[in-house]
Image 1: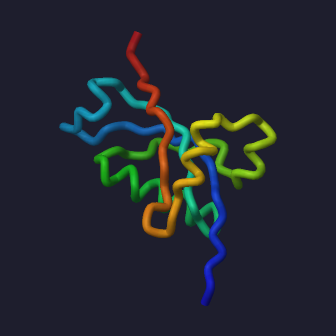
Image 2: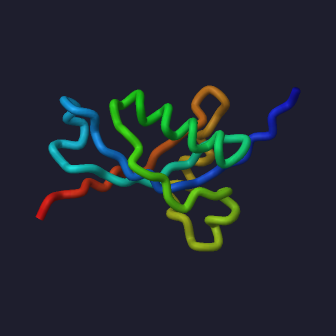
Image 3: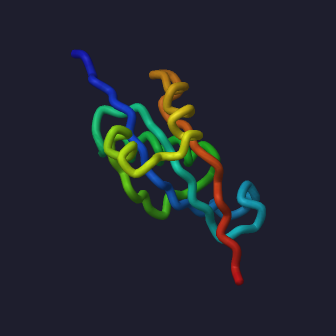
Length: 103
């Protein structure tokens, strides 16, 4: 059976698991993400799995959609470039993580 994968884009809001200092003490972060997936459910699963490898919990995913749908709202060049690097072996790529800071 052939699986037809397309490039999806989303914004992931994350929190570090206890003891993980990857977010440098921030309460959380958000990042744009591109993923090679069969459908939205597959995209969500791959994003969650990849972020779990960094001991990050996904709080929510926003604006999940096919990359072609996002192009209409001027997706950052960085993500378009990242999308070109996606492969079956490496189907998820993240943009810069923007940290939340307590005021």
